[in-house]
Image (cartoon, rainbow, N blue to C red; front, side, top):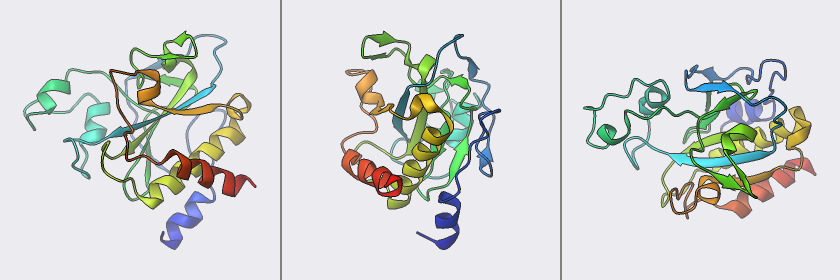
Amino acid sequence: MNVTLAVWLAAVIIDARTGWLKGVNRVRSPNRDRRPRGCELDLIVVHGISLPPAEFGGDWIDRFFMNTLPAGGHDYFATIAHLRVSAHVLIRRDGSLTQYVPFKDRAWHAGESLYCGRTACNDFSVGIELEGADDVQYTAVQYAALAELVRALKRTYPSLRTAEIVGHCDIAPGRKTDPGSAFDWNRLKLEIEAEEA
């Protein structure tokens, strides 16, 4: 991990009033709305995304979350360009973060979902996308960035301090598989705990 990224990761700060991370790239997605009144954050959902599938880099993910993905840009794009989706944050392969939706708002990341008997997981969750694919190893800096983001979320929002961290596959089984078999849940747990200790 380069020194600049290491210093930044040690200082991830969320503005609790606005729900925006300080000092990260922002691409304000229109695909968001207010959370239901009285609904507290109590779940963190990890996703995996790459556009086109298993290809990394470029601005296709940004464009997807901004509703400007060209249907003719790739054969796969024609199947998803009509969707209106977003996430709170994307962590790229180099560990850099882009925020699309403030945490106080509802991002449209979970779709039809169920967790511990509760439907509509978008209402009470934070959605974090990792640039990747189900069967491609995620990078060391992605785990470091994700762990630091989780710690910042727990520091900022008391309701997340004991929150579960799950995959999209866990809240939409049979429909979604991400972040996939390549994601190392134990590694994430150890990274979070190492800095909390």
